[in-house]
Length: 169
Image 1 (tube, helix red, strand yellow):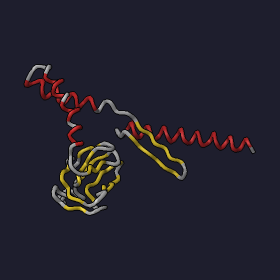
Image 2 (image 1 turned 135 degrees about the horizontal axis):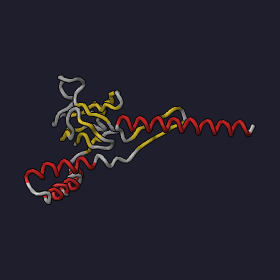
Image 3 (image 1 turned 180 degrees about the vertical axis):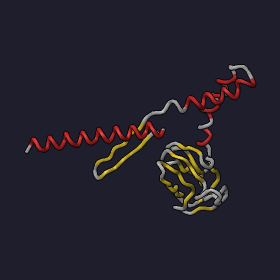
Image 4 (image 1 turned 45 degrees about the horizontal axis):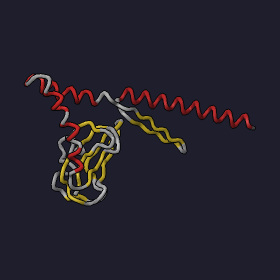
């Protein structure tokens, strides 16, 4: 009997390895930074650190600054960017953050009015916007009732996990 339980453990490990490899391939082919799968008691999360995405942001600022001035001002232009994330801490209200990596949509379909606008009163659970991830539309609900004070993303904009989307006061 001990051999059969050892065989089962070996089979489970093989299944986990194949699943992890498939998930890693999905991450690589889609450009996602994180994916999680749950089947019964088995839960697998695969994530990767993306340092490349920070580089294009750094290159964008110097490219804009380089034609106007010498390359020396470019690092100065890059310095305010890290200071910008400190500004959201000063925001009044609660930030609604993206629960996943995907593309944000402000309305249900192109041409429809947006779910919410700045100044709108919302109720707890009301849909604020949609995040599409892996061809699935995921409505993002208001965590509480309040007033929309800021919409921090644009329509069809890619978003990262934990990125602030909307501010409710």
